[in-house]
Image (cartoon, rainbow, N blue to C red; front, side, top):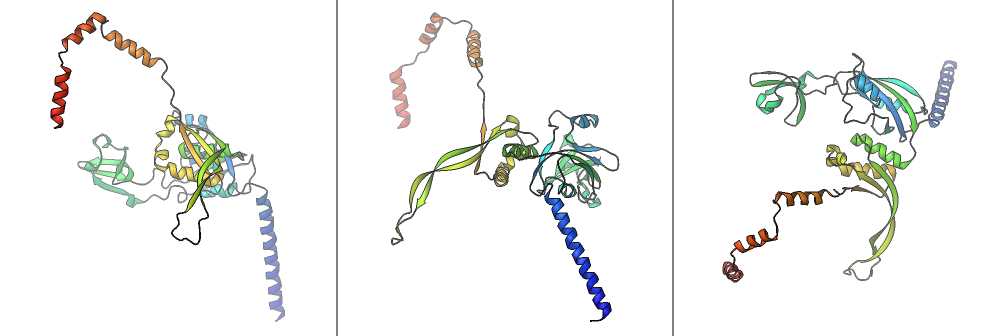
Length: 327
């Protein structure tokens, strides 16, 4: 090997060694901060880069200033799982290795956010495919299973934009890491809040449950029925107190099995039990009975007896008639 080749080899070895050291340092720094799979409570506000329009926020004051409807939405910090796809990938990357109390701003390119604007997704369709009440510019409509927004209607034709309303928009994601969430009940509440935009009451209990367990059968007899015995096992159970809003939530109605399975997988639970409490109406039924009595005009015993006498029914004749029908 020539002197020049030896020098190049030595230089490459130094570069590799430097790279290894940098990777080790990076790993050490990362290990001291937030990791993939951690539950983190975040406060955030997302705006469009172009015109600073608020897209989403956990701050109610910011929402009010942006004239976002605050009546049916809980504006409070969200619990997310880092690396689980709950937030934009660029924000996930920023959280890895960060510490509680850190804050920052991440710019999200349109292609990572809601996609680039596609001219082919603006199409002309028959106005008959749109309900009469929605035949005006700006109406949100569903045509052939696709969600879109009416741009114009001329005669019997409608121009509909099927792009996401934020397609083509670069976003700015401003965040603050409030805390690491270690309590499993808080983790469960946070996950449900993310799915349902509301946080029901939850708690975890260890229940004793009786189950049938197959015991060893006679190996010599292939036709022998498997024998079972009843055993008591412990099951860690997440209880969810369903609210009326939760039971009517479309995400819950159509995806409850997947949501429950996600909760069990991530929190190492055996099962999920959803219970709904219906409060009694108290004295309302009694009051209604009194009202019905009042509506009767104050009928007394004599009136009732007279009414009974007016009913001319012979029981024997009625029985004979019914038996004749059966034949």
